[in-house]
Length: 127
Image (tube, rainbow, N blue to C red; front, top):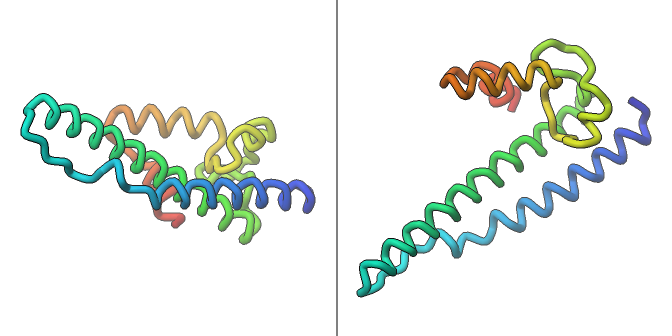
């Protein structure tokens, strides 16, 4: 990967990091609201659960973006963390924070669906 491509991806990732950090600061959706109406309580609880899931997803994405920036800094960006093969440039273009090639990502997704998160653990240990 050329220096200009790395700089472009670094800029994309830094912009994404700033967006995610801004979104994660807004935690109004998880505030517990009391209401005399039980139906309103249930609706508030459902909205709070959705807000918590969104915050969890966004924080996971932020963690992946930060790890990708770290891989740019240490020179391993664009290389699969599992098999050490280059990640397809089209995949890097589409998902710049990807840590795995398509084959290894599919394997990680299957393992996660079965409850075994060994490749995901590899990514977390890289942090």
